[in-house]
Length: 373
Image (cartoon, one colour):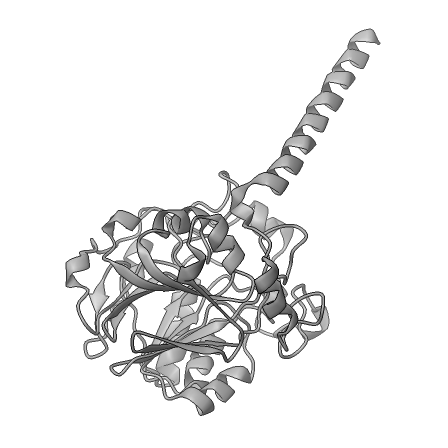
């Protein structure tokens, strides 16, 4: 009995130390960012999208499952789906990618770096979206990216003039990447509340513009407009919706682009298309969907419909092919979205990661099929 009691005491000590470590990490790690300062708090309090406690969507939505309104063709993931996924749920070998050469990113060119990270050369500026180069998690044991044949790192990038951020989730806002980019980027455009995160990671406050929905700023001849998305935010356990989320319109003399960030399907796409469209290209989320999250992430057929609503000449599916964030297989998003685009006669760009292209010569090879052979 004495031995059992001693073992029990050790177990209690281990558990206490474990919980203490977790508590300290959650309250001190720089990964979680920082709270807004007085100036930002005033902007937040004055926002029509803030209800005195948190930011809200244009229409009330739930993040969790609504069994009564599940899409007929979809099912929510079960615990078994997460614990025992199919063998080919994730790529069985490194994803084929193109070795990125920054000198080739000339005027009018674009390149996809995986998930929601893009570079575009428009209006004389190099613009980057949601830079994530590391894990999609604050913890080193989660959120590891899929292996690439030609990994792209920050040192491979050209001079970046502008970074736009859609929201502060880990697969869209990478603290380590921001720390590395802090001195290399000229300006950052972010939704309300996110400025504090960037400042805590070393970005000078003078280089950050914090916008509300429908706010617009011109930077060296290119117009950046933050527009609504149906989603949510938060990097910690207690700060959900304390920062704003959104989509972006990048408008230069040579190209008008829409960047969705994350969000469920809604009438907002049609409203944006009527107000700001047509768009030369729309970068639209197409991955990490599940019936449980049907209000805050789109299914592939909805991504195609969103591009139609936006009156976009080209659909570019993003938010797939880098992280395992849902129960579907890694290539399910691109298989379904290309099939739907064909049915709806929608022009779609499907470049390999690292492949530089322009809107005149759209890449449309089904490169992902090679990993099924």
